[in-house]
Length: 248
Image (cartoon, rainbow, N blue to C red; front, top):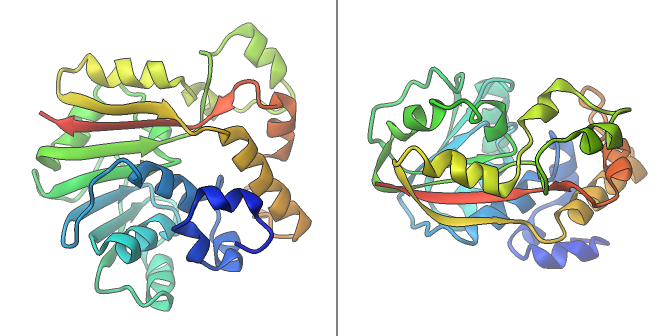
């Protein structure tokens, strides 16, 4: 992807227009994170996939184009009309269906989806002890659920709070370790954990993306840049936990 040396890590994403990625970004590069997640998920054409918290539907478009799956691109912050325009521009409307819904009030039939994924969103609602039992209602028995979210190498402590004191926001309390997420899911007895790890060089990948946005005047004005947070961290704590499980 042009000058992005780090994109060698993401061969599928390399095919997508960098300007398009920048114009639709809402945080860390969602195409890269989706590619990271789907490296360990078996996706086949015709599968029904829920993309929960899809933002501007980049991850949903990626899933449909790369794997031929049907994707319900579900988000609360971005209107389905806006996402439909993006989907139509990418000529993938036959496979991606934009839906406006809140994560605790989903309009789907039980046992409908083969796969549920969430990119850079699950931590906003999934730390709730009873959320996994809720979302699993919509997944077929034996189906796969997978998430990638920003997290930490160590659980929140005074040391971490001091490190990020100039940038800390309440939502950061939803950042957890890969171990925390694994235990959070395992204790329900509802899933079998298939993958539990972190994106190697995740901090560097996130940092390089933020630098590129700044250098090309592409920072989302409403969201702002994460560069200060990342520089304060220096690669010490921030990471991207990945968790994939099968519904029992």
